[in-house]
Amino acid sequence: MERYDFTKALIAVGICLASAGAGFAEETEWSYDELRGPGHWAELTPENLACAEGMQQSPIDISGEVSARIPEITIDWKPVGGTMVNNGHTIQVNLPSGSTLRRGEDLYELLQFHFHTPSEHHVHGKVYPLEAHFVFKSSVSSSLGVLAVFFEPGERDDTFAQLAAAFPGQQGEDVNVADADPNGLLPDSLDYWLYEGSLTTPPCSEDVDWMIAKTPVEVDPKDIASFTALYPMNARPIKLPHRRFILSSF
Image (cartoon, rainbow, N blue to C red):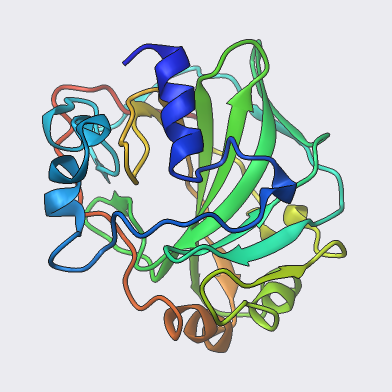
């Protein structure tokens, strides 16, 4: 799929390229259930063909990684939240412009973040109870970068607790979380694994630089339960790596 068509497809399904003020979009064409779940995504519309035919699909199990001198991640996120919406597939926080991630010469602008349970990526077979995806758009193209952060039960994380207390309970509902700081959801270390993959939701487009943080973030189990009460399972099954390299920072 060409980058221009890829961008249009993202907009069509209400993924991150919509503006933060776009609010809720009708998204009933796919789900995680038996009838319209991951095994059937490619059948729902021709735009979803990559969900079945793609050879660089995500998520994957992080294993067989190769140590490499990959660039460090540098975060410059503004300490402001945005609008949190229940979009029918997850809880997503759409953010105003101005927050960036830099990896070497690559600069990305943070668009939104959202959550999956259980974790979509596995690490040597280990599954975490929750995974956050921070979604970025390249500053020079329409390609995306996603920073994935695992969450595990432990000490309370103030930022996640603040969000959990305000999770919109109804599909289409949104709330203002302008005082929520996304920096509070980051681990202490930004050592990471890097691989080339796809969106984990339709249209499963293969134009995503995946950065998987190695260090999980501890959050209160009660706050995880607040999410799973709304979405007990919204994770795509693991896909085959198909000879892709998984690079590991030192």
